[in-house]
Image: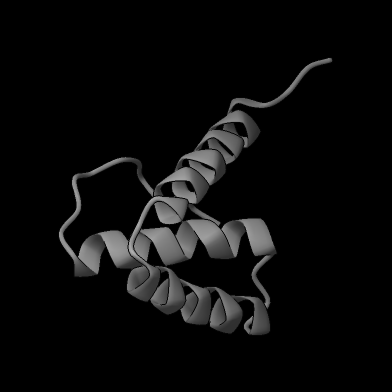
Length: 72
């Protein structure tokens, strides 16, 4: 099966974001959940919403750079 590099990068970003969010304190997870809900309501897929939430949390709390958000 041939999978595009863009899709592979997306899946990798998704699992990285999900893992990092799961290991954060409850208060940050709650904040991320609100971001995810808002993103889904704006039309993002749940997977993309998780990546977006992680990126916003990462920027807000100055976590180390982990990945570049994919261009839509």
